[in-house]
Every structure is written in C-alpha cells, then in structure tokens.
Length: 111
Length: 114
Image 1 (cartoon, chains in turn orange, blue):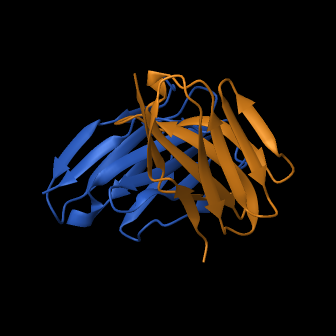
Image 2 (cartoon, rainbow over the protein chains, first blue to last red):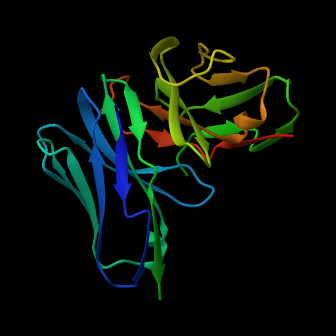
C-alpha cells in the first residue's frame, strides 16, 4: 500500500535550535520527493524537490536528505526562527504525475 | 505572493448543491493542479491539467470535475455536495507538465457545507 509517514506529529523547539523532521515512504514507482512548508490558512510553499539520484538538497537554512534505498527522507532546519513555526509536509510523486502527501509535522518555535 | 489566484476565498453552501471554484495560474505556467485538504485526510491530489488537457488523475470523486480553458485558468466543479466535502481546496501551477517541476500554490478556497 502506498504510504507516506511523517514523524514526529508535532515538535516544540526553542528559537535558535536545530531540528530534524522525518519522512518514510512506501510509494512506488518513485519519481521525486518534495518538502513543503505550510503556514496556517495559507497554501504550501515548496522548500526542496529531490529525484532518485539526489542525496542532499539545501534551501537556505533548510537541508533535505534522501535515501532511496531505505525510502527515508529528512528535513533539517538550522538555527530556527519564530517564522519557522508551520506545518512541514513531505510529498512523494509516483507514476510520474501523481502525489502522495504525508500528514505533516507541526513545528512550534518558541522564543 | 505565489502569483496563483483562487476565488472565492470562502464558500458556504448546503448539501446537494453545486459549486464552482476558480483558479488563475501564475503568468506563463501551463499546468494546473487541484488538491483537497481536509482535517481528517490531510492533503490529497485530485487532478492535473496541462495546456488544456487532463494530464493526471488522483483521488477525484465522480461528483467532481475540472477543466482548463484556453486562457489557462481552471475551474473545479463540485456537485451533489455532501458534508464530507467541507475542506480547503488548493490550486497550484507549474511551468511544465512534468512531476519534478516546482508547484506554486494559491491560498485556497475554504468550502463549508451546512
């Protein structure tokens, strides 16, 4: 069964700290994996897109990793800021143009 | 601002009714995607259009239909509405039709069924 599972469901960290969010998937055939940031009441914003052959991709303080063999991805946020408080969603594209979404990790950065 | 415009922002209607949600993609984008986000099921891919043609289909119900017009705007039609159709409906656009293209999301239409 095609699934995308994210952990943890929610996370509270102090401003300035680093954190890592996890995404495990069983989707096949795999096309690419994306990470999105979604603020409450807004549309998702793309952070990274990785294909099968890419292991790491960075976007500012966000670094995503992909292990296609173990079907795991992580999103590392460095030096967190209050504006990083949002839901982070992992999306796996399969069969070229279809998408499976994880349920997201809700991150709360406290001052 | 993503450049993707969705109207209306909010829609309240009753069970059994029909509604149309509208999406204007970013200038130059040929692909439009529709997604549904509900509290119990998260985000789900519904359908993709590329330059007026249906490109991919996800979990779109038979009561729902979409189209993309020659000016590239798209409409999502929802009919025989049920309470469970209450959700945020997002439209996204990308330049090309391939799945590795970055997608730019609008801020959604919140549909409430009473």
